[in-house]
Length: 79
Image 1 (cartoon, rainbow, N blue to C red):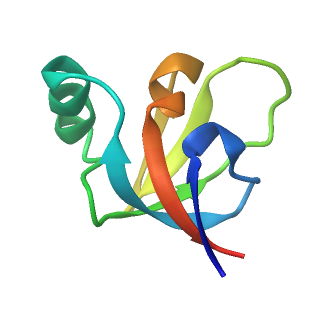
Image 2: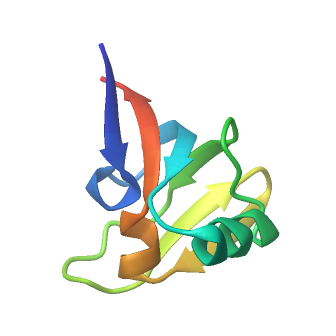
Image 3: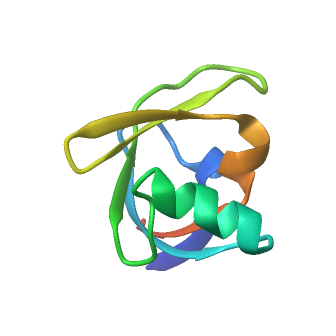
């Protein structure tokens, strides 16, 4: 079963495919500049509690995103 969830709802080690961004042109441009684009595979690396930064792996690059920006990334996850 494929679910659409935000990046903040993923578990550590879980991989999904970015499908859309919630937000305007600024959010879209910032995420694309970091290498997060629709269709790319994203793996959540950390399992920190609270609203701290979320570390993700896109390709061979690790990126730390703030909680607010991570909430705006919608991914499809196979569960």
